[in-house]
Length: 186
Image (tube, rainbow, N blue to C red; front, side, top):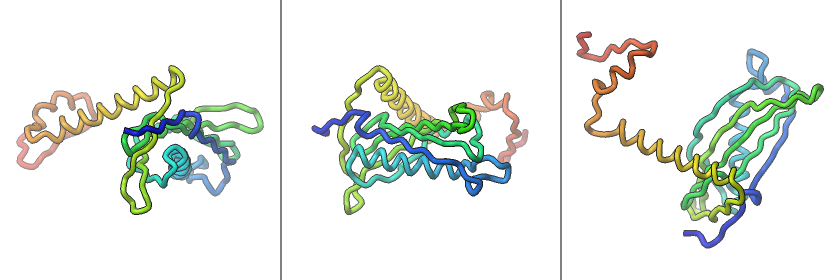
């Protein structure tokens, strides 16, 4: 276990960028892929600042596009370390867009990036522990633990050698699907 601990505040990062027409999609809104690219950059910066090492993206969990971003809006992304493991960190990212003429701010996206610290040879290395300084930081840490546990439970449930689709058919009835499996007589 790490003997070095850092506060959440010590590695928080914030970036702002004016959205240009070149960032837009065919619908005239800012392209989600462009926003994801910026989010990956800020996640890297936040994790690298906390770990004081090069970091790689291991996974992206929960990317919720809540509101579209318009050309000419000022996008601000705020990133902080929500959780640390032995070699990994979960970076929470909050994205807002501001209409610079009216001052109206809208929440556009929230996401969680799992980043892993690497040494010069590309091996995973230990990261500093995390000092949780307020109730919100404790809640973020606990929510991340729950997300990790849920993911593990889901993997166990569906990767189990005894998995049977028949056990889930009633769960699938309300969905807009038709199941046609090979050798299916229904």
